[in-house]
Image 1 (cartoon, helix red, strand yellow):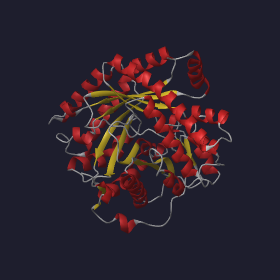
Image 2 (cartoon, one colour):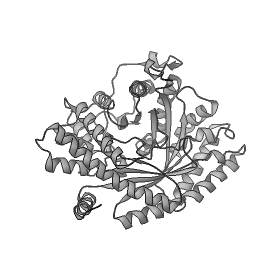
Image 3 (tube, helix red, strand yellow):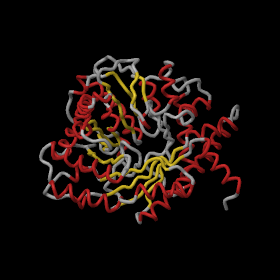
Image 4 (spheres, helix red, strand yellow):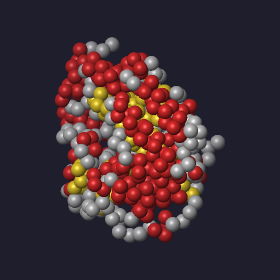
Length: 455
């Protein structure tokens, strides 16, 4: 039974504490769109997406307005295009044509982003996988709303180091081809280990092959809510009180998302998938994961104790969320992107936060090294080394990790890069000058860890 005080509390979360439904994402299977003809494949893709998601933006706006909860983004994720285009794409330009079809369809429907220009290569690459990966820089340079991801490892299979090396080169090329826009192409490209099939958040969203024909996922976000609650009731409190407060707040946030998700799914005549209860920050003041860490007791993220504080936060978010919904999935926890979180930017500028400390924090957060600007002259091998490190953390710890770094052409450490919108701005961070070239030059695969054998 919902009482008046809970209604008032939820209204305050929305009006004063930046509570929103960050995204309603429709996942669509394109496996039945594949054809030996590239032209027919593109036509099938556009028709199916339009048929299923034609009302997505309207429904998202209507539900948000009727329930009084802002629905910030409406997005689409599709089957990894390396699979869809395998029978009809013989060269990079063929895949780029599919990319343009996806982008044009997204623009026509008015969605913010469309994800799934992706390949899953955790154990090896098919010729289609490699061709798609090599087409990513051109595809991102010639589109606006397209997002791309590549999964290079998993706990079960190990890490495909050939794919890791190729992704280092791909990120560098994507940066160069979008150099006139501060290398923004790389902001729409993420490299995963253990990528989930049901993630509604860009740039890593794709519609996994374990999913049905179509599904609606919702991603909620409320770092401002958690921060405000801790500031008002938990200063000086013990850890038990702190944890219980975060857990109860996460429960309430997730219930809001559950309500929106079920209603949106019903109106779209598509099954409800999962709630991703991630604390995804924005550049807005007061909507910061870093501020929560400071409220827990840190001078800045990066101070001693940061990893412990983030582990506590992440765990309580998950505990509260799984009590609020039977279908929690995606990434679900705290995101720590640098450019999208003003508190993280402040910590970098203060000298408290480095890439090495961020890497340690990714052992317990929900994603990984996210939206980090690095010098444009960073070697492709160093980027590949960063990817390998994150993939190893994910593989060994049986969790999702990711890398979204932007080597901004023409920028050096200390410069600032403006991406705009939810992508925010970022200080260019230092990358180790020591080389890993000889390691990255090795071919093959890093084997799965011994604890992966559980059959």
